Every structure is written in structure tokens, then in C-alpha cells.
Image 1: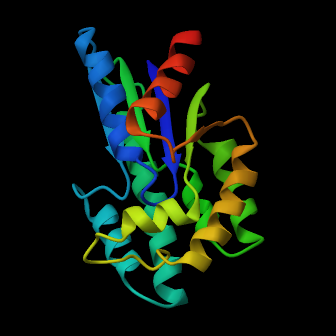
Image 2: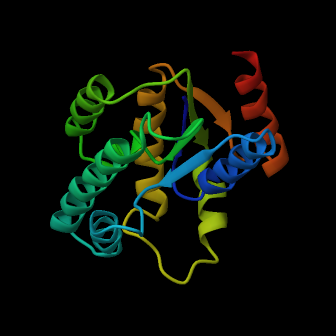
Length: 187
């Protein structure tokens, strides 16, 4: 089974790129499963999403816990099961939203515990581009403000130095897809 991770900050194009990769392999006749977190098809994902829309430290903590459980649920249900390719959207970088030093501890813990891949992509978007893309949304999540984006991006990029392919997601969708495809083809 091919295991692909597409992660990044809010509005970096994760779901768009996952769909493009999914279509690539489906055209080859492969069975592809995409899991995007927080998932809406189970109560853990719905609880994580609800907490993300709330304010305050308790909601941030609840969001992190339910998010992690949602990812673990997806792994248990879909990893090495009846598919050629499993694409996980939002996988490990959710730990960057935790306060320091908990972010690094949680990342190291989950990075050691969870399956890894040579196809782990971090879609990097500048705070300005992130806010431009978020601007059209009616409802904003707790971390969708300039200060939080700058802080979380810095932490996520530091975490991504641990074996991730960092892709400039400020580029047009087609160029981001081409960069991902080039890496997928090279291995």
C-alpha cells in the first residue's frame, strides 16, 4: 500500500491537492482512500471541528485531543486495508497548534508511534496568502488570525524539517500539484 500524507496550515490547499493525487491514481485503476481530518463521518471528527470553532484554552485542548483520536481512528480503520493508496490529509502537523513545548513532545511521540512515509508533504503558505484565502469564509476557526498563523507556521516548518517534503503552496494549484507529482514519480 502506498501511504501519502498531505499536511499544512489552514487554506494551504491540502484537500485540493489530495483530490488531485487521488484522481491521478484512480485513473491508473487503483483503489484510493482519502481521509481528511477532522472527519465529518464520525463523532470524534465532529467534536474536533466543534472545538475548533470555539474559543479559549479548553476548546483548543479538546480540539487537539479529538483531532488526534480522529487520526488514530482513521489509521486503525484504513491503514493496510483494501486499498492501493491511502492519503491522509492533516496528519501530524496538528501538533504545531499546541503550546510549546507540548507541540514538539506530541509531534515526537506521534511521529514515533504512527506510520511514516517517504511521501509526507507539508504545504507551506505564507501568512498573508493564508489570510487572503481564509478571507472569504463565513466562519473562522480559532487559529485563523495573523498572529496565530505566524506562530504555528514557524513551529510547523521546524517540525517539517524531520523528513517532510516542504512545498511552496503560495504557487498556483497546478504548480503545487506538479511539485508533488514529481516527488511521487521519483520514488
